[in-house]
Image (cartoon, rainbow, N blue to C red; front, side, top):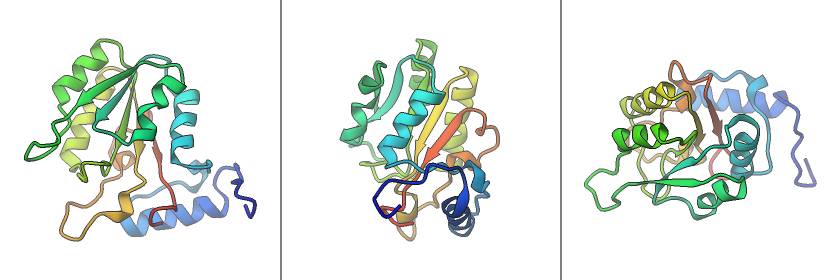
Length: 181
């Protein structure tokens, strides 16, 4: 709204606008009724954690966006770091390590994609690997896709996590108009 507080109704003009944008930009069909405004992406992550995620530990690939590194603790969860070598030729999520973290009790993955600060756009195959690990453990994914519209020409295209088959039952995506929508 004009005062800076969003209208928290599902869908509406914002939902329709985002659904149109997602279809044009990513070829991803979004039901406008599934779009729920929040004050910002971090607030959306917190809402998803509070409402949809089990209270167990939260996996965060490291390095990560500093404000989100504290979100697990803020919501009463332990943070479990999935460390990725930023100097590797290609920063990738170690699916075996992710599997071990979920087997040890983690319940939610905060997936930032395209990743900040790596600048990586995950491929469909990589995201399908993440999906398969998450489903095997009955866990959740919160996919922070705020940078999706900023993928550089010549890079792999952004693949919305929720565009993959078998993700709607365990995932939420958070997006924002503040970057490029």
